[in-house]
Image (cartoon, rainbow, N blue to C red; front, side):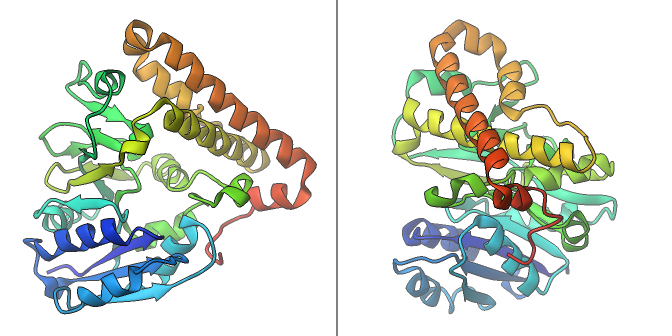
Length: 322
């Protein structure tokens, strides 16, 4: 049997965290062969109490409190404290398929595989508007991809895929590879520190792609991802586009400073992928979201030119020290 470390960073989402932990109790993989590390990134709700209630159901559940802000801080603390070589990163609002961990282990039996993901199916809190449902329809390849809601379905066949199709809410990686990559970049920063946002796990995916390492999509290693009602709105998509603009500005600055390897802006890639759908149904919304994207991109570019501390943060070698 292969030992796994499941790492769940969380902040003030005790209710959804309870649902996530409940789905781990139902795993077909023996609880003797995985640990769960909940990294509490400064919660003020009853997150600690929720973890306490699951200690009898998940024998190897460990709770850590870290008040420093940033998703990367929680992820790196989990990486540091993990006992396993295979790290399973999950969001605090997913519900795993019962076969999730078993399928991850099966996928990593091939020593060439360094990254594994599966479906991230939406668990809509309320009925989505028609324009979102049209974006979530299958493309010509029979795939559904809606990155702004972190949902994805590449079909029912296990296959090699691009690392960019493994989202952070369901992201399993060899610890040795993650450390060689230099860990995660900043992500999910609080609003008052939003200019310090980076490109999160996208950087790790870029590293894996450049090293020509293998990524596996396994439909049995899948999760349901909560999509709250608040995210089913133009306002949320504009906010998400603004944040993506910041992330892509960050990537551009780093690439220019280090190796000048240029990765196309993620929103442009997203728009090209769905161009026909956008043109037919979403022309006005596309322009609205694109405007928000460039607003975030421009803000970050200007801030990095004016603030030496911010620029030095952006071009750091790694962020594993928090």
